[in-house]
Every structure is written in structure tokens, then in C-alpha cells.
Image (cartoon, rainbow, N blue to C red; front, side):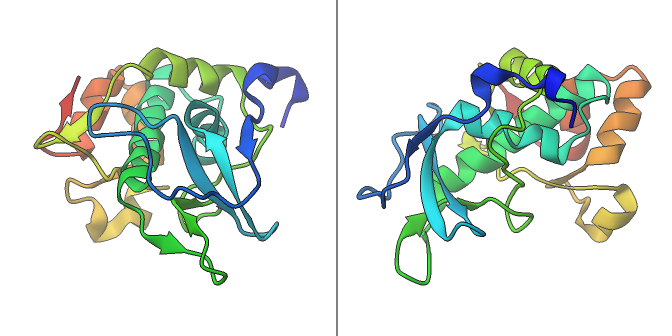
Length: 188
């Protein structure tokens, strides 16, 4: 990655690398969590990470920073919604019985501390006050790389990353992109 594009202010805000004593989030379906428990698989530990910092350090690893801004905004919403959902609903535990919300790998979303970039962070900031719900609950937003890779999963619960790029290139807004992939959602 181009080090000149990194947003140094959001590179990594680790709140704690000591085992969390609290497994429940402070978030709700209408209030963002302040942090998320990330299982750092290679490091063999669970970190409590500031939630906004987490989203900013996932998006450039899931969406290409050079893509159109509306695609990045759609991606920011999907990344945020996925993390938010798991912060509310996770019952995961490590092999040593430590609770966590998400993996830092493709098993959840790729989280790399220090990877935040200016364009992707701008997309996160532009959509931060918006939530994506279905029937009043935070959407378990899922996504995959291409419509072909998504296959039968593109059923109203999955978004194609490359498809979001193509729709943004065609002039679609991020809201229209999200509503095309995630059926029955509300953005508020």
C-alpha cells in the first residue's frame, strides 16, 4: 500500500490487549458499539478495538481504495453493519474460552491495523451516522468479491464488491447500490 495515503489518525486504536472481562457490547440496534472484540488469529489473542478504527482498518482490505467513492461508501456501510451485527450477536469463544466478536481474517472481515487510507476513511466518515436495518434490526450484511463468486448467495443478503464498483461507475449512489443488493433494508 502507498504509505502516503494512510490516514495516520485512524491507523490503529487498540483499547486493550488484555483478555476482555466483558463479552457484551455497549451497542444496540440503534446505537453503534464503541468497541469490538477482534480475534487476532496469527497473534493468538483478542483485542478490544475502537469500533470506528476497526471499520477504517477493514474497508481498504475488502474494497479497493481506488474504486469510485459511492462503491466505497456502500462498502463502508456493509463493513460497519457486519461488524455491528456480530458485536451484538456473537457467542464465539477461542480455544482458551475467551469471547470475541469477529476474526481478523476472511472468516469474518480482513482487519489489518495501520491499513486505513484517506479515500476509504472518507467513505467511512461520510456514512458513519447512517445505519442499515431490516425490520428495525441491524442487517447481517454479507458480501463477496464478484457476482459469479457470490453465486446463489446474491439473494437479498449479499453484495458483490465488484458489482458495487460497476454500479458506482454507472452513476449509482451508495444508497441505491445497497438497496439493490440487500432487499427490504432501511437506511436511517
